[in-house]
Length: 299
Image (cartoon, rainbow, N blue to C red; front, top):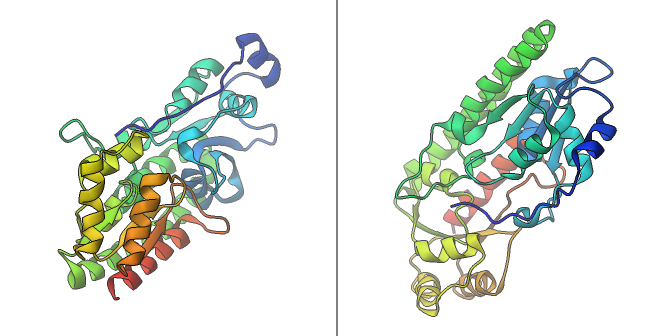
């Protein structure tokens, strides 16, 4: 399912050229490789692997911001125009990256599209593009990013490789935690307001009971039919699910009703986000998500 996006990109080519002051794709003035990521999720991973050897810019980094209404700025355009490596989620999630890249005329940057790297394909015309909740995908992305960084700065290859290995070890630990949950709770029903955390929930053996038309409508920003809403609310009154995963960064009347119904029925509500919460790195964030899921399932 592709997300709605609003992007303000009223920059003329002449303005971009004046802003950049140097050729697109060039390294930073201090000699460091420039990495620009669409969100702070990928920016954090890049910083973890690269350490202080690169300059990383994340275009979406406000945990209070609705990612659906992100507006790219002149600063975003400038950053993309100077990038050596561009990281985008893909799958229709952050199409603004392609718009920015086209506007900046940066044809030299290495582009890493994480959905493409994942190898995931649409099923029945639908693709869950929230691949940062899928740890095997992040493993593949880590390998691809490490290769790209090593090519951009061969002198730092040993550092990148060492940091990537340490990060991969933490990803393995996260997958082990999912396996532990699966061994204990496989088959338990869950509900979601949007499919944001589904990769994690399904890896833990949980079954999404949410009517597809509900989460699709919420993600697309369209009205939920009264019948579909009632089907969704019945999940909680009928105690068909063990938890509700609630996207904190996008809310509306229907999701608030669902949240209220879960609370009224004593069903735990697990908040999830699309970008890194303040003060968290990727691994800490995902461990906190797994903690919350485990706590909810245990009730």
